[in-house]
Length: 228
Image (cartoon, rainbow, N blue to C red; front, side, top):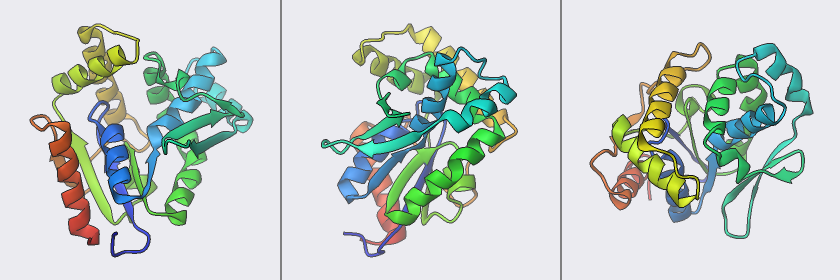
């Protein structure tokens, strides 16, 4: 048990750094809620994709926001499920082509504003570990713990390619690497809440670490900040 009643952990970092899998494992270990904010943006990206809208056409994307009812629920297995207008889209939002849609719509300030209060309310209600691109800098600037998780682009591409293969959607390594490098550039150069390390965030580079070593490192950082 942690000594602080309700606390928040912000985990930021580039695409493919392992934020989701590590945050999920850490949340289970600490008995707190895991919030995958990337899945929320992917849900909007998926809707834009289904509507055949150019994700970089900001006015068109903004126009469909009132049509969206996005809900985050947790299954009996404790895993986060995303619902779009009542339909479980947890699998569809993980399709490779949705990554670029999510990246593009997340660069639109009105989209970020649309989701901001939803994310903050989750952190007010219970202890959370929330991962994304701007959690420590914009969404939860007062988070008790901030971690910037990263790894070399090639390492991230290897991990993502393996993940895609295991999901039954194998993608060539070169293509995965190109997508990651493009997304890194997009996320760090966008005008709205660009990807950057918060000044008070702890940098954790997992390039040379196994999954278990990375998990232990994150637990060490969190327990060091909020007590155990």
